[in-house]
Image 1 (cartoon, chains in turn yellow, orange):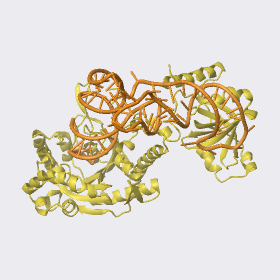
Image 2 (cartoon, helix red, strand yellow):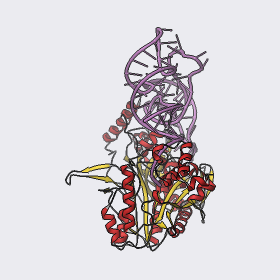
Image 3 (cartoon, rainbow, N blue to C red):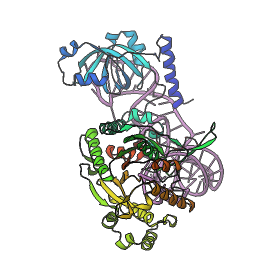
Image 4 (cartoon, rainbow, N blue to C red):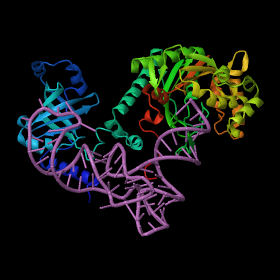
Length: 496
RNA sequence: GAGCCGCUAGCUCAAGUGGCAGAGCAACGGCCUUUUAAGCCGUUGGUUCCAGGUUCGAGUCCUGGGCGGCUCACCA
């Protein structure tokens, strides 16, 4: 047996036994703290007067020991909880020779400790807890990642996120930010009178988006169910039912490729607002996103990948066609004529099987030519009808729908439209999708008879929108991959 | 799924064209009462991702596989 990981673990297990022999439970059931570390640090941030600190009395704190500096009969360490970190000082003369040598000196970086003592400042001015009592709260049995470089290995960071969070401050910051973003979205929508609802994640007919679903099986009912690709059709049923403003914030699942912008399960907020149209949602979206930036980062000007992005409204608004023409440099005859578009797409080496309808071809060209140009927040609106089977036609132009997508940092973060509430038109659109599906488009929508039936009971004029939370967090947190914004991204299992 | 890159001690990283696999941190033993990447002395630690192959000799070259990253392709 060498001194590899097993040996290190053995050493730590030996200490564990040594504690037990001393009558110390290395995993006690409870420990009462008087304050969080953050509260103490905040409260005495400015206090440098020794007697004032001493007069503040004793504090009982707990946290993970993140560093340890033994100096013979005196030792310094830092302990950290979720609110902050504080230095502690342990003296043999104070806690007694026995406790100091047999307990404190056997502690390891990574152990959870409970400490009680008064505050003071060291020679260098650091606020420090002078420990009177120390309690082991949980013993580590594996060494933590190195303190200076942290955990760099991306695979380990994703697989063992807990280590990433222990070792890397930046990672902790990203996920705290994510939490604030989600809270901010809830607060915003509830402030506007939206009610939060939950709709099925397991659906007999997966609808609301063009995507391949995951399939599962319910044994008792003996039916296949699909993990939802979107909550859309259920949410609009609720608007039919009279909930004029609803939203759902949760996971969706799409059985497709993985990339820096795609995870098989991802978080989306969808909201529906009766008596609003897509233009009103643009204004709402600007208000939401600029407010989130201010609330979480304190600024509407943010940095992403070294580039400055200004999230202060109003955002640029450009029609789908104009975006192709002016941003993408796509010739007008391509935009106006399907055959030209087909030829143009072939020259761009877009796969033949995607060149189905004119709108779809333009969509493909858009993704290649326009999307990569949209660094600053931009609403692209008025999309082709045939790639928007749930959106309402534009008045005066039956080839277009009232739909927009919001792009920030060259990523699609939101998709919204004035909802199609004409049941007869909806049925026709579904039928057109079914034809696409028959031609081999696995992502085409399926017929949902009950949804059409619901529309027949009457959906008021309504606008709806979905925002990709993970991508929004990526942008606000300035991280390059969606995996950096998801705590446990989908990975192949270890030892395949 | 395809192309490119990566995988070496618990962690972070080294090992010109094939030639004894190393350092720092961590760990272990010792010294040390104001340190904070504490310091000093000493010790230990390896299936170099896996399986084959070439070779006197493979971390290094070849083949196959695994896992990850990036790019491409697709949905947000």
